[in-house]
Length: 308
Image 1: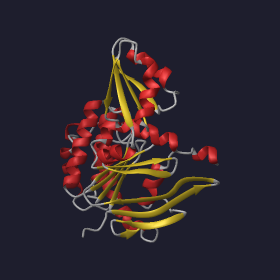
Image 2 (image 1 turned 180 degrees about the horizontal axis):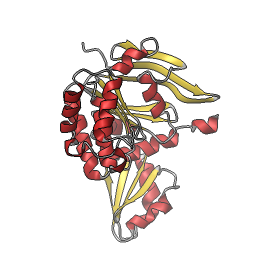
Image 3 (image 1 turned 120 degrees about the vertical axis):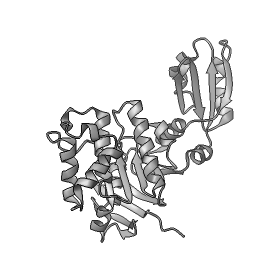
Image 4 (image 1 turned 30 degrees about the vertical axis):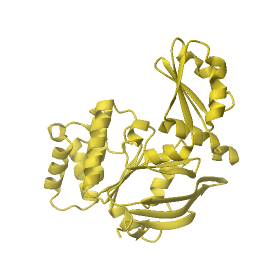
């Protein structure tokens, strides 16, 4: 049986009285893309940093790429590429100079050839002498990814890599991520975008330090037990504020001119919308979305900042 690329158990990290990661288990096989989702402040970045050896856990253990995440941190870091949430390269250097700098840190042989290949692969060759500070968000993203894979890592840890990037650049980025996974590279990527989560092979959802859901998008939706209704017709989208606090409803949102409502009990959901069914609207049952599930899970979680 193939050894997991990531296999951690009971990870805990505390800052003072606040537990930001609370006994998280995560197991990912090689070549898989795992989306890491959760509200801001839920411990996603802290978990990524513990997995790749940048932080020492206060509890728990495990392996990454076959190495102990506590006693063999340097071995893990040598085989992992970590793309931070905030762009971390030098803006007063050119694209090529930044990649050469990273290559020297990893003591790469044939540095010129390695950098040339990275520039070609990510479409940066024509801009290689451009100052990094003059790049748009999409081009900075490409450069950051090129720097991450320069040393041919077996694992990529990407912390909200597409935040602030236009849709075309996001799609290009995800095409490249899938190409890397096809080569056997494991990817753990945190994101707030539901469409990106659905492009992952599997998903892990963390809320305020606790892992609350794990599996494929389809599995998570099926296990949620949620029901959903869609209303169409004149003024349907304006009912969302009136339904959000009604018993039986966990989420109500307008999508264009239609209304999407969901809750954990099908009968209670129909009772909740009953007063609004005589407004000339058409109501029908629908599949809940990932966003519905995550809003529902978030409502069940306890904010660890309040608990502290």
